[in-house]
Length: 486
Image (tube, rainbow, N blue to C red):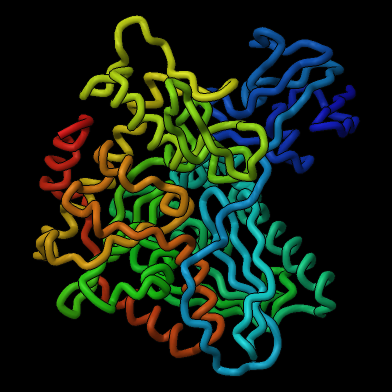
């Protein structure tokens, strides 16, 4: 049978066998279709428009591709998730060992991949590049991807990242006339690093949450089919505290005072330094800050609404890339919910006012009651994690010098609104500082200096990991912080 696929203005036609799952077929052909729920028919992100033909479960001219089976000739329109992630970070040291050649730093995020091409001799950044992680087709969070791996898709998950890395390295080499790079330095959460190296991530998803490896890994690029003489994978602390947060702590200079780094993505990783000691933890914030489990949610990419306010009785939004809004990212969601609470659209428990079904932000972008509930769970986990981490370390909030907020969310975040909705403790409002993609910045430092890699290894070895899943204090703080308002 024949399947025609429209994406943007491009139409391609394929031959396919009957009985194939539509989403699996589209993935195999390279279409970047989000399936945030892991293909379980819940998130609605993989919906396609049916132009010709018919599918079981089709409604109003569209069907969820994860639930659709190819039974006859068809013509569908797909809506690909495209764009790049945040590559900016606050300026950090660019000191170098003076090694000749070029290197690339790679931050493997659950939602996006961020690359930086660097002149190893001069310490100069030549170009940065961000792209959505194709693994998003297998679920929005690490647990759904571990489940996919357990179901036999481990090779596909590895290939998603390796193929994108090959493409970007090829792009850099062609543009700058390089035969390859000397070193590729890689960070990411522990699960992403397992997928990158083709390691079994099953233990990360099951209690007692054990990783197959945490230490620094070095191997030849040819072992992964990459145009790099060496691949350097940075060290992690625990199953849910990865090399991205270790590199982030390095770049932010957490050890220069009583400081706390919160790297907030699909997971909330936190690193605290006080009295010469390091304390690490992570919270199961869920992926709503990166657009998953939010009906109109998206990552911090072009087309995402990143701020929401009211002016003269009208809702005013800004959009990343300044084009048409296609969804709302975590920073915009914080603003929208703060505004909803201020206007009385939701009460202190998060419940919609009687007669309200959804809160309209822009054309085809809105907030639902379910979105608010998912946000409450995530913001409460972040705030409770900060409070308990400080308490476990014996640090009073007044002693904290800085609360560094890293990642795309922190970069676009209105910190006043974040405090209003209870995402951060109110008493820390004047200590919050957005520092961008510190994971990529710290990885660049390790790429340029052996001494900084040694610092990263020391942080990973010495940080005391506090397991919040076993903490009654965390559960108490989590529940106490669920509502909006004081």
